[in-house]
Length: 573
Image (cartoon, rainbow, N blue to C red; front, side):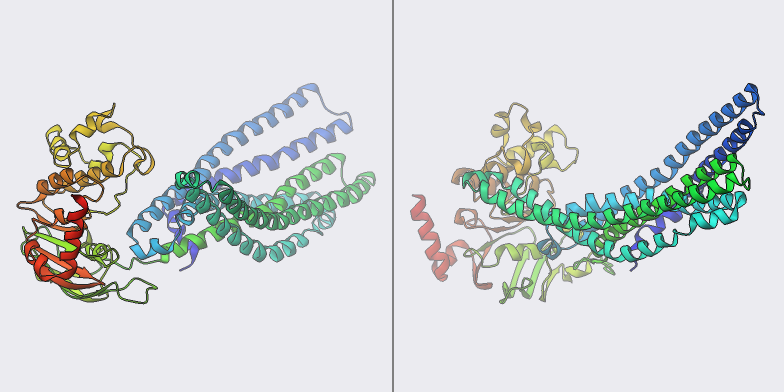
């Protein structure tokens, strides 16, 4: 898809606004073109000493009026055209943010956060400049340049020919530089993404940097990326720095020619002194369109490079979608069933999950246990289609989950991750995600998550700001906040990934007790105390199910389960 198609719909939606803006811009140009005519009449009258003070006052007031009109209409075109560019920037940012959220997990595994941040800041800024001032400069170049030349021809065609003789050089220079500048802008933007990612990463991991005293390594790494960014910018500046001086040189050549030829024509009486001054004024007005050509090329190439980068994102389709999925899922009646499910991560040599068969019965507690890296977390992510199976099927109420609307499907699950992510807002924000809860409901969640006493120790209670990634909370506190967050969706199937790994045994027992009962729960855990009340436990080793049964049965029948349980019991005593 052509990158410009990203912004064309917004121009179509605001045709009236654009028309008003362009008409106002052209009106400003017309008033600017009128001022040299007033100056011409004034100078011609002064040259022959045939003017009264009252006439001078009239000309002065006329110029003041033109200046006032220029100010008014300039305000209108800035509100219309620059305002439109801000609107396009806002719409594209919202569209980008929405689209990125629809993309699947593999995209984020391959894309750096800094790159996405650069898209949402630098790239959008360049597009705004191209659609705002780029449009203004382009219109000015065409209209002001053309009409200035017409007025110059009206004064003296021969002198005009001499004046515009150097101007084709501008187009040749512009065409030569255009492609090189586009490539240079793309390279510069790519390095800016790397720089943004480096800064974000070092700031995010500042505690590790300080703990291991790797400040110097961090500085050297960032310095290398920064130097590369500077080199790319210097290369780009060399191009733009060549373009603009060339424009000025060509403009000054025109001025020199007009001084020589126009002065001679004035002396010979072919044109009047007023005509000569007016001609120089029009030539001065023509300098801006000549300069604007270079600036427009600069802005458009920046904007185009940024549009191309954004277009790559917008062309990326989510690997997991619900297009043509007709089924709604308002409630789970039977449960979830895995049939010969296998899965492999991109780039991995071996399957992470191999021919998994298991049943999650509605209203029952299901446990998953196995050594680290055996595939438990991966299996849990298959339920709400955070990732998709490579072969086999996952069914809910006898229907393949791929037939359900994704929003409906994910609403049926409450997923607590092994390493819970905390947003930088308050504890309340991290539990409720903006949902309005009554005091009774909030108290229920805090009590079930064993947070009531903990919250009381914070001066601001649940309104305490926890900082980036919940920096003021301990690992156990984060886990309990995430537990309360999971309980918010009471009618869901609870997917709990190692939910009590960072809390003491007593607290862990309370957390598990709070959720067992009529709920449907899938618990993946290294803590065997979390699995004792499970109706069925599946043992996973090397991506395969090597045993299943209740806790007491597995102690007898499964070697891994028995050895691990006795070792853990011994260590806890």
